[in-house]
Length: 383
Image 1 (cartoon, helix red, strand yellow):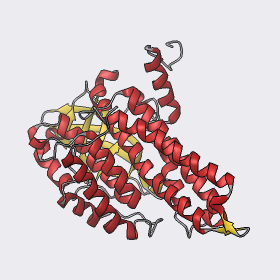
Image 2 (image 1 turned 180 degrees about the vertical axis):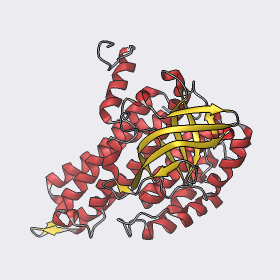
Image 3 (image 1 turned 180 degrees about the horizontal axis):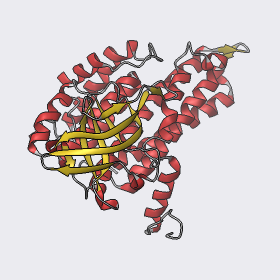
Image 4 (image 1 turned 90 degrees about the vertical axis):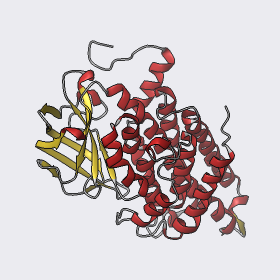
């Protein structure tokens, strides 16, 4: 498996690494409990052309391979998790959906602000009765003349209260073939966004209530019959999320590694104790094994990633990140558990990703389905 980059791509990733280290890292772990969209950092990435790194050139992107975008997200997250998360959504989130599937008017309206770093986007899939069983979603859309009306409710929509737009999955008809997607502006008539709730890492999430929310017809990305296409693009976003958690975990590993050479107990650095050496070795192994699967999932991707490889990458990366941040806290002892240190926050940041984007359980089932070459239905009487 060849993970090598062209000279241009390698230079671009090196630029990202340098900018993230010099500009983002000095404050990347400050003010951890107060969420703020990293506007200045995102605009700098926009000026450098990083946010369109994987988008086609004909829509203003750089046309680079998916691996370059994955590496950029990992490097940014290592220096500043908040900026890494925002870059993840810009590089592999709704912009990728619109670039692949949007019409000329949609790409002209929505992509330039994403590429500049000016626009924040959320994705809304989950509903109170449709989490892992996404095909059970009940939020309905109907087209009437030149408008589309949407009724239903959504939950766990991250950053919906601060972002400008929401890519919302909804149902235009019965069955899987009835699922499509629309673009909502935050001020859409009939849309109510709840107060902010918070995930354990401090990221805000919101409920969405749609009471005949009305959007113009040009805001419909897919009027149904799009579930497989949408999930194909979403698979790459899941892989990119794996790169983000690995970036955060790499920062935790480096803190633990350096601390092990500085911290003295019993008259010598703790890195001289075999248990600490074993812990560091296990952390390194988990990170490198997960990286292989993340890079493998996207090295041949053209805006999509296979279900098998994206699921394997997500499970491996998210579980490795939880393991590594946990082990880093253990090495720091009591100080690692203190909120004065960033390690416990880094753990709280990566832990939700074993659930978000599909739980590790359902992804293991998807992996088994691909390995067995057969459909595994979880519904009663249909397996």
